Structure formats: structure tokens, C-alpha cells
Length: 220
Ligand code: ADP
Ligand code: ADP
Image (tube, rainbow, N blue to C red; front, side, top):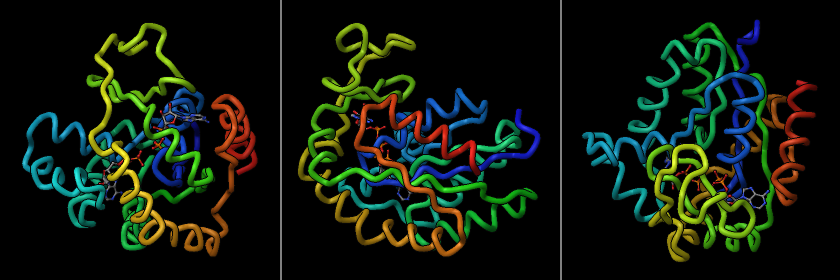
């Protein structure tokens, strides 16, 4: 565990590689990956009340309302394994979420270390979406062409079945990209103004993005 807690945000549109990079960085830094999308999907799989509330929004490609999302993430961040820090993947996605995160971290006696903004052109994002596959049991993401599993249809980590997310179908992806532009992209300026934003080129092979991120994190 690092001496000073390290709280990083991976910011970027759907398909920019946030989850892929957060998982790698989590192993490198020894701090957990906190993915709001994974938390929602776990709640839906386990048929919780929160999952029931969130499902319709997710299926449409809209954001889940802030009051549901913030409570879920705050609870996760209060767990003991996040005391040494966390990599936030997919949260915050709105300005009110970002403001609440500042408050949550300050209540924990901590603060944000930095925000890694992963940039990828829109046409590349759309191409990636069609090939993404997710492990049904652990949530790890693969790509049929760019990041295939060792054995077709099975997760390398736990042999879970790989499936295509319903919200990765083309129409919903378009909606999610529009929602990103409207509601999430203003966060770049929010964090730029606070001196926390670091840009990373996400349109390179996975290993190269990971190397750039490691360099940027070392300089924080
Ligand atoms: P991606 O990795 O493609 O960006 P996620 O797995 O992070 O997608 O999110 C899937 C869906 O879960 C989003 O389209 C949205 O409906 C919901 N969601 C995830 N994180 C948030 C958030 N911070 N605020 C509101 N909704 C969210
Ligand atoms: P996000 O969490 O931002 O939605 P993911 O990490 O799930 O993104 O990646 C989206 C898809 O693109 C996945 O199928 C993943 O395997 C693939 N992918 C991730 N990074 C790259 C990259 N640098 N080049 C090509 N494909 C990538």
C-alpha cells in the first residue's frame, strides 16, 4: 500500500480503454479499481433494488441519476481496501458527481491525486464497440481483434463466459457517446481549472497507452 493514498480518475468516452487501463494500473499500484459500470452490472446481476432502478437507464444508454450513483460509489470508497487509494473508472460523469467526490474524499481525509484523460477519436470508439466482449463473472473486458482471450469465448482469468453488453449495440453506443459529449466532457475543464488534468493518447496499442499512463502517474 502506498504511503500517501493515491486517488486517480480515468476519464474518457465509452470505449476509450478506461477499464482496460484501470485494471492494469490497479495491479501496478496495488490499489483497487472502482468501476461504477461494474458496480451497476453486479447490482443488476444480483437483482438488488439499486440494480432494478439503474437498469432502464443503462439499457437506454443514459446516465443513472446522480443520487443513485453517488451513494453507490461513496459506499464503495468507504470500504477498508480503498483506504490506501483507488482508481476511479467511469466515475464521476457529471459536474455534481465531481463536486460530491471532492466532498467524499475530504470526509475520508484524502484528496484527488490526478485525472487521466484518455483521448480517442470518435470513429475509433465506434469500431471498438462492436468487438468488445465482457466476462460474465469478473467483468474483465476483451476485444475480438485488439485484445482477444487465449481461448475463444472464455475469460483468461476465471474461464467465465464472454458476452456482448446489450448497451454496446450500435444505437445505444451512439446515445452513450452523445451523453458523454453533453454531460461528461465538461469535466475536462473542471479538472483542468484545478490543475489535476493529464492528457493521454488512448489511440495506440494497449501496451503503449499503459506505458504513457505509468509515466504520467510517476510525475504526479
Ligand atoms: P463504458 O465503460 O463503456 O464507459 P460503463 O461500464 O462505465 O461504460 O457504464 C455503463 C453504463 O452505466 C453507462 O452508460 C451509464 O448508464 C451507467 N453509469 C456508469 N457510471 C455512471 C456514472 N458515473 N453516472 C451515471 N451513470 C453511470
Ligand atoms: P471503457 O472502459 O473506456 O469503456 P474498455 O477498457 O472496456 O473501455 O475498452 C473498450 C474496448 O476496446 C474493449 O473491447 C477493449 O478490449 C478494447 N481496447 C481497450 N484499449 C484499447 C486500445 N488501446 N486499442 C484497441 N482496443 C482497445
